[in-house]
Length: 358
Image 1 (cartoon, rainbow, N blue to C red):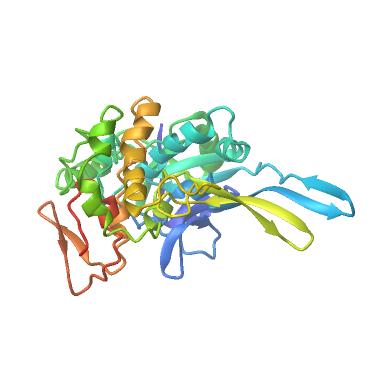
Image 2: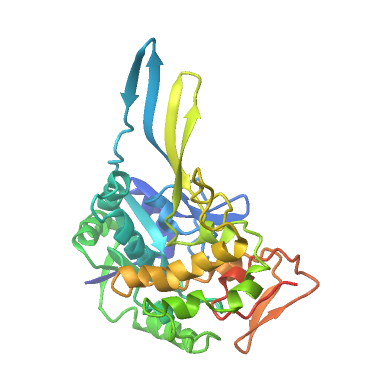
């Protein structure tokens, strides 16, 4: 069943859901955050700076607390997140990214915090009305015109079309019905066709994953290209922090003055102290760390997860060029030298090994 509502009523709709995480604008950036009527909702922005994964895999979260009381140690566990919430406005690539995270955090033994958030979260996805030139999700079998999620939505002018796709989605639809109006299942077909026409014109529409996968380990690992490409990498980790599928984390202890707070936080394989042990790091050079990120996403992960790649083609890597120095012309990346600051963000995430900062 398809429904529709006027875009002018979306805020009223969200207010009926309780806790909502949606794309909101703060400090001139659009990211997923806790929505309220006072926040600026930005459903017109194709891709947030950071992905929606923070709703399920927070950048930082407590694991355990130790409190010293004389010679006794009291151990406190944080409460399991059990508040229902709605993730509203996720794009097809971000929803697919959760399938990758599920492979990691829901495999036995399942991560209790992540599992609780996945159980309590209802995902309302929105089709990409205007896919960007940097998008290549199709290479991973993702259809931007038909996003997965508990509810799928399409925006066509001043109308939002709404279609439940799961039991959770149907339950949310019952809550939303005072704002919804039934319409034919074909009502969003024009919006879908408009998206397809844009996708067919994108510079990266012919990009494929031929030559990558779990069976090309030594061929890719020993490639001579890694040495040249890694010279441009600063090891800043920005690429991993905006990535919707990166799942690495560190565990640290913090002295609160009253005890010890143990927490975990996102980490990056691009950092030189990543996986540091008493004997040192297994990847002491930037070349090895650079290679590790690509190999994990396009070789190691699919080799161990039934061919599933740990990338969804969201294109946030190109968007990290904060100076706006990169653009695509006729399928080629062109650099405006007057804007380039040699930050090196672009080179490590170019799948075709075409960018080198010198």
